[in-house]
Length: 262
Image (cartoon, rainbow, N blue to C red; front, side, top):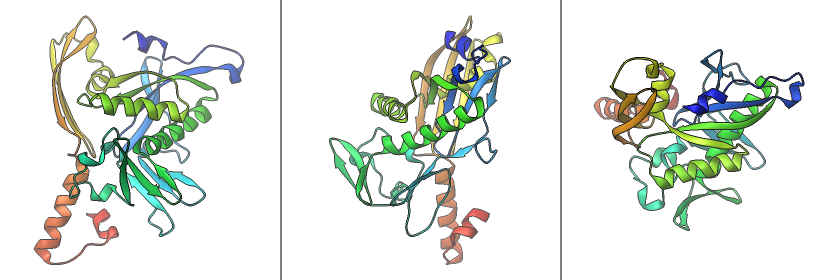
């Protein structure tokens, strides 16, 4: 918990020498970045004044666009890349994951790589583009340097997935202070460490992942007693199954606009 003590913006007269510590939720569907301000989390708004950044990365031949759901023929767009980070080709479920595979992919050194125009891109590098964008947002909003960050990850992430997240942070130019389990981050955000609760169940159903953890709280210290989840279960999957059900029931094919409306 000591890390929370250093999350306040630095006190200095020179704006350009200010250093900040931020927290990042690198989400499957959306991501965000925040600081601790006056003792509470303060989400930094994006360039379009939004709180949440869609975790979408689109590649064109000469540019990379983050946060926009591009569907043009001249772009390759990755969504929910968190579902693939730290995994290899053998881990891919071709039925469930086909929505997240917008181009040809292959295995190299036991990791997934995508053929993106003339380059070979990994899920780590795609995730790094999201982190880089969040870093740019925070530096613009705060007017200073990001000296360090905490990134949340699902409690059930294995060593490979955690290391891949660390690698994404390094590539993005962020100094990672630590990875924090998402259930623990949720407990802190709700101020549970200040309440006299011995055990708490954290239920996290997101856009692409499902996570349940039981935490033990003792004098402000969180200990994970048990955790479970599914990195291939979330709102995306509900949408997919619901769409398939309606299309089969009505014997029709929904277009993108109709799916969004649904």
